[in-house]
Length: 161
Image (cartoon, rainbow, N blue to C red):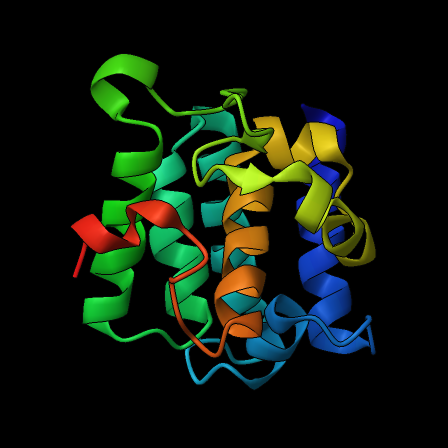
């Protein structure tokens, strides 16, 4: 768990201060009007991410990741609706580690054959995408961005708009 926290913190710091590969999450964090480079803001953001990882709070991870990406309220609600349709909290809790028959993993059911290479470019191995709510939400933001800020990559989108 400590390594996961360090990875999340290091990824965020690197995205803000250096030129990581041009992924949606790196771009968004650097350009987000929600994040300034002040130490207090960064410490608060890192504390919130740390708390998400410690508590396995997949819902909070989705909300924060999409908010940082500049999603509007309707888009954030849609992302949360998709998370609930993909891995219903009533049956699957946080959704962490849940794997479908089609090789989709974690709370947002990220398809491994399609997105594993992208996750690796973002600095997340597949274990983290499956078991770390923040990594799963970050890859979901990248998918959303690569689909033109659209949720059509998720089959459950039809239930959420």
